[in-house]
Amino acid sequence: MKQALDKNTQTDAAAEKSEKSTLRDDNAKTEKAEKAAVCDDNAKSEKSEKSKARRVINKITYALTITVFLAVVAVVISVAVQYFKGEKPSLFGYRFLYIQTDSMTPELQVGDVILSKVLQTPDDVTANVKEGDVITYIAEYGELKGLSITHKVVEAAHYDEKYSRYTVTTRGVKQGAMTDPPVPLENVEAVMVKNIKVFGAFYRFISSMEGLLIVIILPFGLMLGMLVYRLVIIIKKPARRKVSPERAAEIKAEIERLAVEEFLAAERRQTEDAERQTEIERLAVEEFLAAERRQTEDAERKTEDAERKTAAQNSDTHQEDTP
Image (cartoon, rainbow, N blue to C red; front, side, top):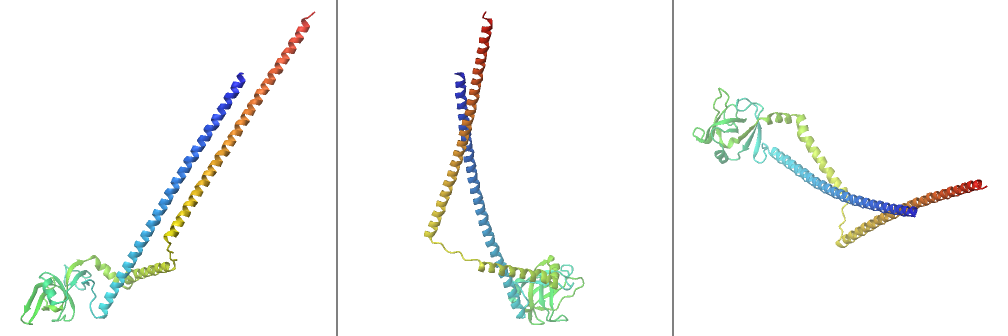
């Protein structure tokens, strides 16, 4: 009786252990599937965001390239037109001028680059030039007649009775400099806005053949090459076909159907795996119980053999004691 109770207890314990193991495996599989789904969704979302950001960056880069290229082309065309018309090049009404002599030392050194505002008419000169300003003009009188000079104004626009013209009076600031001959208002070309000293070395550099090649021609060529390359890529890229709303709905429905089928297939695989695991555990339990039964039967046989042996010995002893 006791052996039967022990046997039932062992069976119940094995069955409970099998159920707990199955439940634990199912929970582990479910948790793993949920984590995989979350990771997959996160990966897809991250990939979509990166692709979107890459497209935005490409569009911005393309727009900037086009803008810079068109700006450079516009500047080159503007300067070229002014040059071929015999005018001194300027951009947006301003001009860079290079100081070549020391007549304005110490205020302006040889090699300095100044930014000057272009003056088109005598009225512009009257309105924008005052005493103390630095102007650039074409000399009409004296030894420097016909040359471009940059000097400081010592007397603003006034009527010169000797020449019967409106003029300004200028002089260099170098020690010992003499007052210049009168400067007619129509000869004034520009008034200095700012002395840009750092541009001096840069101007000298780009004035050389090496500087012109490195700073202007090479970047312009690279920009032109990039633009041509992008245009070729765009032309070769196949045009995207427009999808009608009905076709888009069909594609969406097909994708959803395939997703559902894939999900159901995964569920079936999980169920089959669980059933297979359950069968393996059932067979293990049966094998364990069979082994227990064999051990019990062996023990019972040994007990019976021992009892028979003891009975036989007792019988022999009894016969020996009988006279």
